[in-house]
Length: 333
Ligand SMILES: [Mg+2]
Image (cartoon, rainbow, N blue to C red; front, side, top):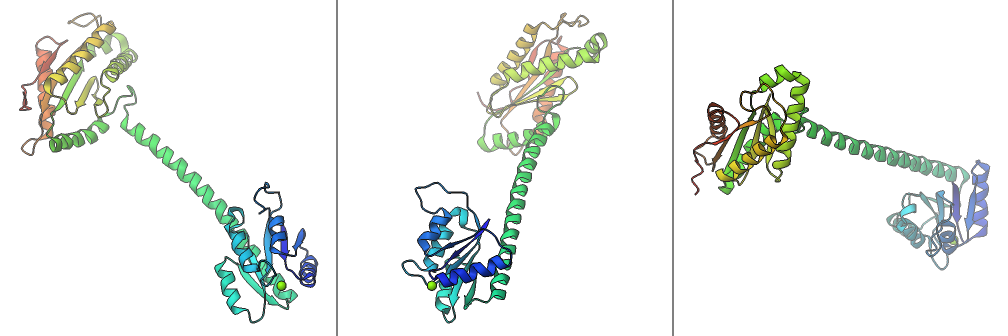
């Protein structure tokens, strides 16, 4: 990391270089014109940038061909040099050009004839500034990285908090939070909303016979079937309680809800998961209740759940392993 001195006067260049060398600065490069400076900075366009990076540029204001102000502006336009400190070297009484230099992006200035003390003080000061900026950039980068990790962790957490740990379906909490949203949406759109409650038949007997590990496996397999059948975006399939599941089916009339329930029931029957102790049939079956409403202000959303629940109990009373529908209250058909 060197220092670049740009001045059309050899005397000036030598003096600045001598002062800086005397203070222990190394890698001091001199340029006699803006063009030479651009070459040293790798601003020659067609060529690839070479490795020299300057930590400070001393730039004479008055130079033939291109003056220091114009040169400063061009340096600042380069993304790699946007933050490199530029100290303008100006003669006394060039107040106007100094203003222009600051507008062009100069960091600081010293006046000619240059005093050694002032030069070194300015260089030290802009270097401190530069280092502080570099440190801040690193910190910002670290902060952005941390924020990214945080938001990813949040995403995973949200997903986990919405998911039933055993079955991977939505959990009760997710259902509670989203059912009301679907209810409101259906009310706004005046669309039928169907709910299916499902229960694994004689699950207590299953657990007693096959153990809790076996019971968990059974829940997982039934949940997997439900997940395969219920897959429209917007549908909710959740574990409602122990061996109870709930489906929320937006824009779905009662027949549609019954159809989905029958599909789930049939798919579970097809699995033929042994359930030796079941008084119904010797494999795992479901009882299901379906209800449908077009929500409006006179209705409460718990009513829909209660109807589906009553239909589920009717299915149980009538011998289980079946789908029962509540009376159609959707007002359509
Ligand atoms: Mg000059």
